[in-house]
Length: 204
Image: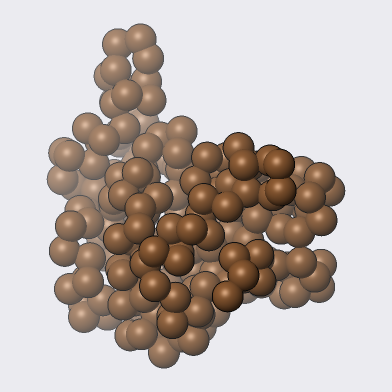
């Protein structure tokens, strides 16, 4: 398999996937605002660096198996998929990941940039990323600037949470602690930010 065969090259396919994503996530918002559409709840948090790891594919593969999806979409929203990535490189920084991929191959896809532009690989040049199921049963929003990611489900499905045992509800103080290094120079997350995050992301 060639790594670049998984990336979206056709504009119409990109627009179709973007329409699915927008049913799950409001791509014009960022945390601590509510980024998910109103049908999605059951929020759980994880550190950003953990989703940029080889092992993370086991997690999203498990979620996709439970939601009966044949593939998972990874969609970089910043840098902009059309105005920057497609314009510069002729394809999108979005990829359809079949469940048959190995963890190692997933890691290779994250690390492969356009020819002679390795710094534009997803693992390096991605500040806002979404992962989502084409069945619209779950979505993940990840923000490198705040060093955080959050998942939501469109139904109250506790069995999915068994896959996410290391993910935490917003009420856990560790979630805010993950973000403190984004708030320089004193590394204190403002109380107004914390309050809004907790208000918007109560688990149920």
